[in-house]
Image (cartoon, rainbow, N blue to C red; front, top):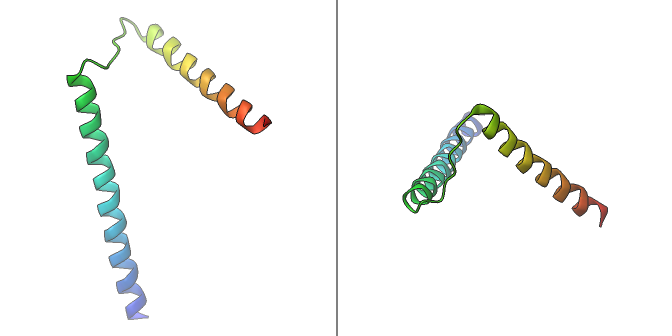
Length: 69
């Protein structure tokens, strides 16, 4: 039983390390995009909302098409 708890603890630490590495990579990628000018600015909440709704609609369409194949 003790070995199982130790194994779970070690596995949890490994999972945490993996998540932290993924977060660091995502942050570095985001910073690189900003540095390269790959970003969009919005002048209002509504403009941002409209942009996000368009992205969501496109994603839903892609998913629907993939499931229909």
